[in-house]
Image (cartoon, rainbow, N blue to C red; front, side):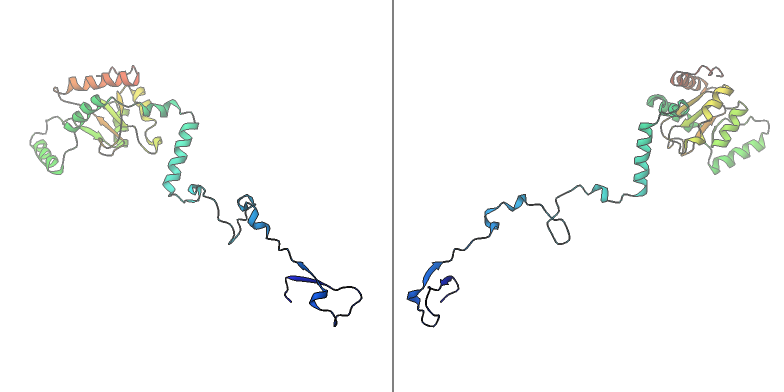
Length: 229
């Protein structure tokens, strides 16, 4: 007799005397699991350890960016949300590219002398002490401020990307106060990585060019205190 059969004993007979002919055979109906008839994709998922596979998600917020990237993002957000004061907003209005190119040519003509050129000049000055000091462009924030305060600067050139901006934020107001023309140019690289540049005088050949640059500065910054030249 197999396990797949159910046996029911007839009434009025002993187990020992029963035979297979006296028994009623009932076939066993096997019930298949519900798993084979149900869509398991709709079952709730368990995302625990060693359980269902997690769906694809954006992992950007889990990536650790360098510190300077976070600072750049914060700076952009602040620039978008904050109102820029006029004293700082003026540094975004730079000189025209063509005019700036001519201005840099003028500054390059009066760039500081090298050691050899300076030595030769000092020797010439020693021979002729009465010779007037030659005009040249002055570099450095403190030096330019000193020239503006004594009104010896003919033109002040300021870079727009000074960081921090507090170093030169007062310089435009000082130039207007002292009646010294100034311009703001894009980038400090043409100014040899200095914050500002001042011209304390030019020769007769460059006077007209300097006046043209001062006129362009007046139109660019909308300031009327440029009558020094």
